[in-house]
Length: 350
Image (cartoon, rainbow, N blue to C red):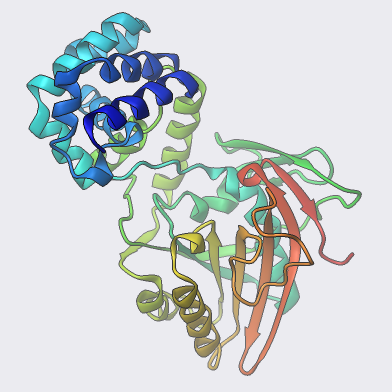
């Protein structure tokens, strides 16, 4: 991004974003030639406002930018803008180092409102008394705590743990309520990601918090609860490519347990050829045991999952359930969802 284009990116981010504090900082950065030059020290793909503002927030949370931390705590946009520019100029190498090492994260357990009934349905169909969860593109592994959050649907439910500090609500679309079927005992929690985050590592937990704008108190409180719930039963995190690591992950699921592989908006980052390789690998692994795959992906993104005639990029995603047993496999759509799990239309059995 040349300087003028970069300034426009920050200006627009500041004007249309949802955080007043980050918006004020972004607009101030867009007007500062020195700040923009500091940002240009980062690789082009790491200059976006989402990355740089999170990197600044990370330094503030780490105690390395006390003036910025104080401005954020006070909710003072003008002071935050001045302190952010001072931090960019005084700690350019540190800001760039964080930006290069990290990627923006929006991990939230809201996806569990979609995953929970689909995982329970997979277990019900094969009569499984325990499941081993393998989440691809796991991020911080919040999906792997699906049984440890409390979920309320406006029709059907509640599901999950009613005493959980993480409470989710989901609106049901259509005339079918979400079935009240519990996820059985979770015997294994395994995440696969090219860059997983370990919530028990203070630096990784701090980065998750840094990705939440400092004036979003409700989101910050929810994230703290999500981190606590996940840390209480930390998953095994495998770093690398899903096609390569799925066999290792399934081998770690006890033999008397149903492996349930989950993908939530993870396949769209892969090429179509790589998605096919992933699905073929799952089918190959089902030669020796039953394997279930629950997907929440855009229309046409998950190979073999029917589209129901829906158009790609139609604004909703399809919840797929595949049960593979040897050469036999059954794949169907059990739901449609919107807004990353805030709305769900349950279709199974219709």
